Amino acid sequence: MPELQPLSFDHAPALLAFERENRAYFAASVPDRGDRYFAHFDERHAALMAEQAAGACFFHVLVDGGGEVVGRVNLVDVADGSAELGYRIAERATGRGLATAAVQEARGLAVARYGLTALRAVTTLDNAGSRAVLARTGFVPVGDVDLDGRPGLRFVCNLLVETV
Image 1 (cartoon, rainbow, N blue to C red):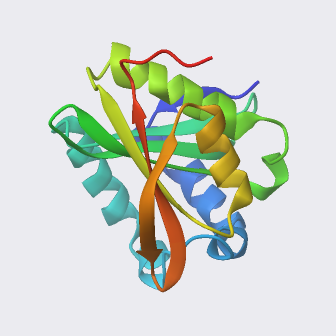
Image 2 (cartoon, rainbow, N blue to C red; image 1 turned 180 degrees about the vertical axis):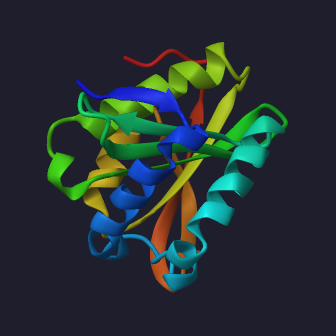
């Protein structure tokens, strides 16, 4: 089973490979990061590390036994005891329960390590897999949202309530 690790500077090459390899796959369900993201990856990675050091965000990578990144789970916009959850799993690693396990683990970290009491998330209506992961990990829909012109749902998860 891959391991969820806090993002570090050492993850940069594997993370860039993960993003490049899965770019088209991700773009089918979430807005594309754009060419600038890839052209300036090192600067962006350094900025993420600075945000993490400041406690504004908590970034994680899901790393397999060979050191390859097969997913990411991020807690961003940390404020007032809550954060927004975002995650993505490599196309070749889908369908094995990795997203559910990684989000569940991130929920635990959110409480135990980061002292958070709630998480938020959004996904498009046509992303049934993401909606299912959120439902399985204790998120409940709370309203509609527009995601770059695509209809979606906003979710919340109260971390003080234990889910099965």
